[in-house]
Amino acid sequence: MVEARQVDVVVVGLGVGGEEVAGRLAAAGLKVIGAENRLVGGECPYWGCIPTKIMVRAGNALAEARRIPGLAGKSTVEADWTPVARKIRDQATDNWNDKVAVDRFTGKGGTFVRGTATITGPGRVRVGDEEFVASRGVVVATGTTAVIPKIEGLSGTPYWTNREAVEAATLPESMLVLGGGAIGCELAQAYARFGVQVTVIEGSPRLLAMEEPESGEVAQAALTADGVRVLTGVHAQKVAHDGAFQVTLDDGTVLTGEKLLVATGRAARLGQLGLENAGLDPSARFITTDEWMRAGDKIWAVGDVTGHGAFTHMAMYEADIAVRDILGQGGPVADYRALPRVTFLDPEIGAVGMTEKQARDAGLNVRVGYVPLNQTSRGFIHGPGNEGFLKLVADHDRGVLVGGTTAGQSGGEMIGAVAVAVHAEVPVSTLLSQIWAYPTFHRGLGEALKPLA
Ligand SMILES: Cc1cc2nc3c(=O)[nH]c(=O)nc-3n(C[C@H](O)[C@H](O)[C@H](O)COP(=O)(O)OP(=O)(O)OC[C@H]3O[C@@H](n4cnc5c(N)ncnc54)[C@H](O)[C@@H]3O)c2cc1C
Ligand SMILES: NC(=O)c1ccc[n+]([C@@H]2O[C@H](COP(=O)([O-])OP(=O)(O)OC[C@H]3O[C@@H](n4cnc5c(N)ncnc54)[C@H](O)[C@@H]3O)[C@@H](O)[C@H]2O)c1
Image (cartoon, rainbow, N blue to C red; front, top):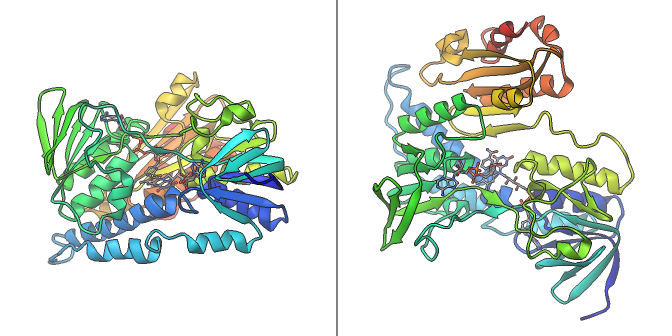
């Protein structure tokens, strides 16, 4: 072991959040060590958001072409995965090579260290043979990895997680998907649109269990329309693999599939990080932070690892707060009231803030506005492909929106308007006096607002 190097900050994990923190601090002139044991950029560019949205975009193009009959003539669609896999490999991920990202960081003046970092004391981090002492502190941004449930026979089989599903150069004939959350649903629809026979097995009574019940219904209808078999309220009891997978459910049904995708959630792996050496609890599910992303003395945490929502925009948001704190720049602190999220199905399901149930459970005087998209002018014009709804949740006592869902064509774009209203606490009365362009999808928000007056 060589003598410990004195630096200003060590960032552990250079995924979305860590890369942002490390790059900005280095650009500001601090002596920054960025440690990453896999690829700089993290899950989002290599196995998450970007490649999966390339798949979704391609699948949506196929679906739209298949809507031409009855709308505009005839179409013959022949799906081909090759350009999708090529774009992911050659353009999006550089064949899973992070040289560009490493250069981006070192170009800002940061020092990059490849390897697994562990915290050895307050402000101290070891990576391989090197030890660093950070005078300002350590930022933990180690993200999450796929949870693999304890199901008899599963371990040891060649099951897939999102990583293998993203890296696939060719598609299987069939795929069983364990878990009907965002990952399971998005990948199920994309694969199905390329001709894969997909079955989704979801343990809870509905898909997208964290969102509005109506969102789960829309997701289930959309997947079913694409030929996906959706099973809810059932659990896998046993998994076997003999070239193909057999999954036995708790009701005795046996399902077979060429591949098995495990998409049953993600977890922060805190046990191996040495958090106890910095006074933090390594057995916790997530790292607890205050409004400045401080987890303790001279230690910050940002991104998935804080448990505030596993989204790239959350990692970027928290990174910005930690950077401002470390540089003493002040500004707004963390505020999670208007957290937006989009499940990239067709139809897209945008959501922000509280669901109706969350608002009721919080004891608010709730009013709800709801409009099916196909009952709006634009929905009528657009069909086929006009499934979805707009739902707004208001705190009637304060006269503001606390949440909303925009499911439908451009649902992920529409949610922006609701997010502004929730974030800025625009009075419902002000929103009701707004002019909404005709005939847009978002004009339906004006209708959904009416019962909230
Ligand atoms: C299939 C999929 C699709 C997704 N789609 C979206 C989407 O459309 N929109 C969206 O907002 N979010 C999406 N997400 C979530 C998004 O990818 C994550 O929220 C985001 O990557 C979190 O960033 P992070 O920096 O917290 O963690 P990560 O990106 O996971 O980065 C953490 C990094 O730390 C490294 N690391 C861990 N431990 C150590 C250690 N001890 N030493 C050194 N390095 C370490 C890891 O290798 C990793 O590179 C998706 C996720 C998945 C899996
Ligand atoms: N578009 C996006 O922003 C996007 C896309 C993908 C992922 N993500 C992020 O990644 C996170 C992880 O995604 P995910 O889909 O893996 O997790 P998730 O927590 O959203 O969904 C996992 C689902 O698996 C089910 N489940 C758990 N164990 C099961 C079992 N043994 N059998 C059957 N079902 C089981 C759960 O009931 C749940 O519905 C998301 O919560 C989200 O924050 C975001």
